[in-house]
Amino acid sequence: MTNTAPLEKKKLKQEIDKLQLEKSKLTEEIRHLKRPLIKNPQFLAPIAAIVFGLLTVGYSFFTGLWDVKRATLENEKILLQTQIDSFKVEKQNIRVSNVKLTEENAKLIKETKLLRDQYKQFASRYNSEKKDISNELILIDNLLKADRAEDANKKMKDLVTRLTGISQRTFDKTFDETFE
Image 1 (spheres, rainbow, N blue to C red):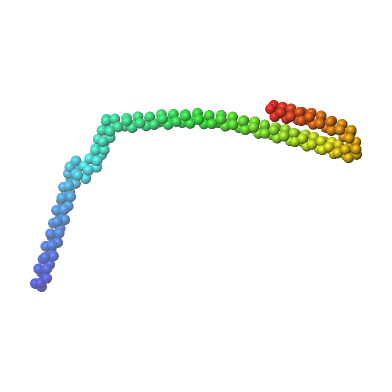
Image 2: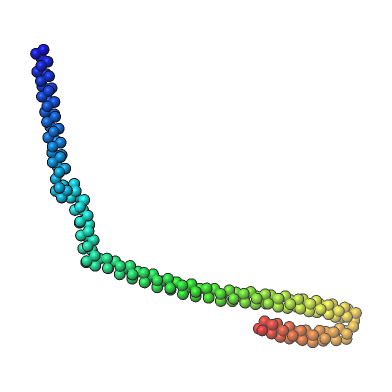
């Protein structure tokens, strides 16, 4: 029994020490909570940050930093508006140019079609005249073979006269149609 008594005494003493430490801790926490907020560092840290931020904004405002940025933005806005107006004018000029080019293209297509038709007519007349001349030459050849030289000579003169007239008429007509 003697061995257990000092052990129990020691445990009781430790328990009492522990309770006294808890009591002193709680007393200190109560005293700390009863202090005014102004003296509490946990309250002062966020307040100091807010005050410092407000002072920075105030300094920026009074030194004109915001005015400079506002003026810069206004200048950029004016520059962009000028560019927009310039692009609108350029867009309108391109549209007008596009309309003119479309009209010119249509005119060139029409002229090309007209020239193609004139060429077809000229080729048709040429082929017709060529056929007629070939027939005349065959006739002259046949007359020469039949010993009718006088008739062949007369047909040859008629053919030369006709060819001279055809050449001039064809040239005049082609020239007139081409440059109308």
